[in-house]
Amino acid sequence: MATDSWALAVDEQEAAAESVSGLKSKDLVNKAFLSFLISEDKAAQSLLNKLIRSNLVNTTNQVEVLQRDPNSPLYSVKSFEELRLKPPLLQGVYAMGFNRPSKIQENALPMMLAEPPQNLIAQSQSGTGKTAAFVLAMLSHVDPSNKWPQCLCVSPTYELALQTGKVIEQMGKFYPEVKLMYAIRGNKLERGMKLQEQIVIGTPGTVLDWCQKLKFIDPKKIKVFVLDEADVMIATQGHLDQSIRIQRMLPKTCQMLLFSATFEETVWNFAKRIIPDPNIIKLKREEETLDTIKQYYVVCNSKEEKFQALCNIYGAITIAQAMIFCHTRRTAGWLAGELSKEGHQVALLSGEMQVEQRAAVIQRFREGKEKVLVTTNVCARGIDVEQVSVVINFDLPVDKDGNPDNETYLHRIGRTGRFGKRGLAINMVDSKFSMNILNRIQEHFNKKIEKLDTDDLDEIEKIAN
Ligand SMILES: Nc1ncnc2c1ncn2[C@@H]1O[C@H](COP(=O)(O)OP(=O)(O)OP(=O)(O)O)[C@@H](O)[C@H]1O
Image (cartoon, rainbow, N blue to C red):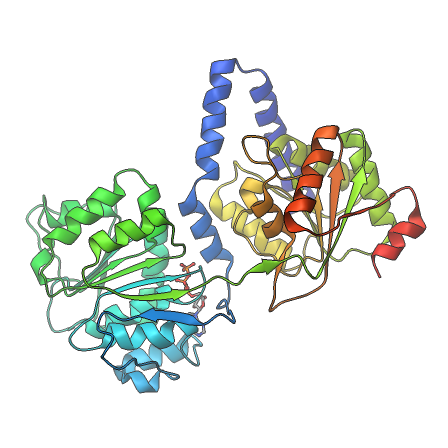
């Protein structure tokens, strides 16, 4: 981030922090609730992931397939040719730079393109090719000579719908007869009109209105129904019911597809309710491990001392890029300011930034324009920055009850086996409380965290080897 805009961000942050300190307790509760809402904003996180991702996420895990009819042969394809796609679609796929189907696509595409249509519930982490898969299925099933909606896709938010719409436009670039319409709030149509576009993508509330109240869409003519980001969907009040109400209007013959990045019990229950007789495809997330990470802790008495320890570390070893986690926005803002004064190029990821602004900060960091990324956990959740060799827990991760947040600890510093790069993690301890958290984290993972004396430059130098 350029110094000016960075300074601005810090100013804003500090102003926010000051306004918090001046609040009465009731307001503080509201503020806490607000930040809880932000932290739980799955839709924002999902969008952020989409915006910053440039590549397919590969995993070494195997896809699990559960077929509705276990006797029917299981097809998987290793090339797009095998799918016998319409030529303009194959052209679209190649123009997007896809050489071969991703792991999940190998199994999902033959199922989705089969005749008669099959229903599918598919779960795999973000970036594994789900969107591209269902977009291809929708485009394949459309009959462009019929001028009415045939495919309906619901997404949890306007922004996510737009992102999927972009993929439809890209992949359908050589298939201009197929038209797309966005069913999103603000897209006002004349009463009594009937849509001519073959694919409609939108948010559940508007899609429901367009099918039921305004009758722009005849749900009985829908051939493919896609419910995207089911985990995000059910986290939003009202979306679950609206999705079910849309689904009930569709004909029995309609193909129903549901996608989710995670599979908690609640998502499962919803998926089973909404998708009749499904095939199921699951691709587990690659486990993270601490095996290739050297872990240290430093004992300090205050945040100023922690900052000094950090400077000593920077003075002794060369750090290509580091990510520093703080507990609060206020600390993050302060620390970014101090580091900047020391001449570091600092990026600050802050909770009140718009999702696009956050994506831009991460993108710049990825490109190496900044060497240090200071952030709170809330902002960085779900973001994998594999290139970072050093992670500093300026504050240790704790949950809302003050217990160690082991999962977050692992996610911050762990690496997936495949990338296995060596890493360095430094934990700052500044009280009995945080020492206790550190010990419990150590016990939980059964991995020793070594003490580091940051006043001893020789000792610090050794950790870099
Ligand atoms: N077969 C493929 N070959 C190469 N790249 C692909 C392939 N399929 C998808 N991609 C690319 O990989 C990235 C992730 O794909 P996609 O968005 O479809 O995944 P996703 O599982 O839907 O993730 P999300 O839910 O976050 O969107 C995109 O940049 C997409 O263009």
